[in-house]
Length: 141
Image (cartoon, rainbow, N blue to C red; front, side):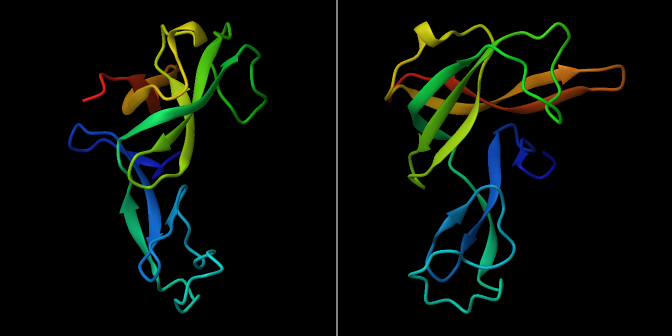
């Protein structure tokens, strides 16, 4: 997941790309060419620029993850169920899937609930604490 997100300034941001000709955002990063069939750009990859996504959205859908995913997914032993949410970003109006912060269940969530990106621990090993972006509910302001 290297280069999929950054938290350099304390704010978690998903890293992707965006077409400079038509504005289409891509996550994860697209480096080949704009895939928007209505784009009038050159289609050689030169129209794609790095892009940091917005940090807030609303839950579009959510579910329990009760079974350990197969490799290459890495999880703690023993496996601990978690919640995933598909979130529609406010600015880009595209849906991004991610885990919900630990401690919440599907009973704590609702479609349309506002959430924001944060960092969470995916797993720990002898060498490091491996982090990933997660969604956490926020007050709608």
